[in-house]
View (tube, helix red, strand yellow):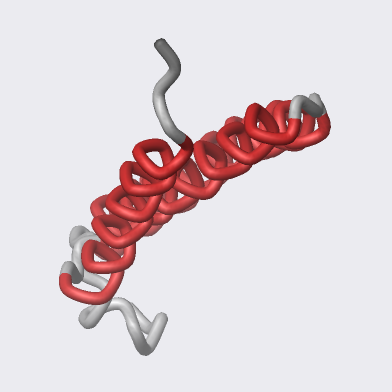
Length: 101
């Protein structure tokens, strides 16, 4: 028995919506960064679901490349967040808006 594509898209939409709420509501840079990654995973799940629906591997290949780029982004993003936190002693985005310490 196969799972309908609607279930995959519902979970994908829930992941993306949760990530969007996290970016808009939270002010901590690390939480915002994780929320963006949650949005990316929601989009990747939708790509894989549509790829499975059409019997094509294009969406899965695109998801693979997206995950590779996301892994590199995580390394650079976390390094920037740690460097800013060491300098400013805060991860609150509102306090870092002027970039003058």
